[in-house]
Image (cartoon, rainbow, N blue to C red; front, top):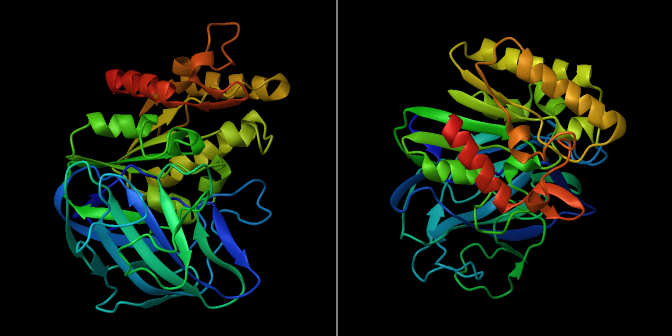
Length: 377
């Protein structure tokens, strides 16, 4: 990554799914993004054409699957206004180029940078990023993030990237199709990265409100601390332990907060020793890459586990609290913040539930975690 750039947003743009169509297509995607700082900006976009983390059990998308070949027809940044309505402020669009070209063919698995671009986003306004993409084949092509969207996204068939109005655009439900890294030119004292699953990404919190715990932490930290959220819905520790596309991003950190394990114990039904082995591998790999990296390991968040999964959750968290893997510099007990009092400490506090059936932490929980983290940090 470029040392002069840090993430311009706390919105996670990690990929956990891939488009799989029976014929080639051309489509335009417009995403509204809150920036950490307003005013004149020099932006620089980096993209990795690969899936970062596994969705479900990997039937369609698994960690480090390579994207197919596709072409960027055109891309623009613009002032998205104060409300994400599908249009952009008239006259504000600026074309994004790649080695001086408006279009670019993206090869399977390719990593690449855009050229720098200057734009002025007023306080309270969104950055609107729009690009038109053509796939070069049928089958699996473009990696993206699918989950309950945390940002407003519109899409439309055809090449409409240069269109200022919302004509033909429809609001998207579950496709976040954006570059991997939205950077802005900023000298920072350190790069702080949050590596985790949907709880780190912020899934189930209110769209466009940035009320999840990582966003709330970033809002209280000085902008001289760069913050990059690489949380990914349905991700698990063994995705990162493969040392593929996702961990490559984590290696850009000076300091990293790791919050993994819910999907390992739940979705994947792995046992405590398997999860601890994967966490140990991740930490060792990061330390070998950068011996000076500061690693904060979190306990596995409370997720209403029962029976054998609850036993594994308790065993892992006991080990993290008392004897974390070699290389861990500090431990933050996120589970303690979220849990009810013992003996029901495997249950999320009711006020922190998304709803009575969904233990994803809501915005109230995000506030509690952020306050506890900042007081501890």
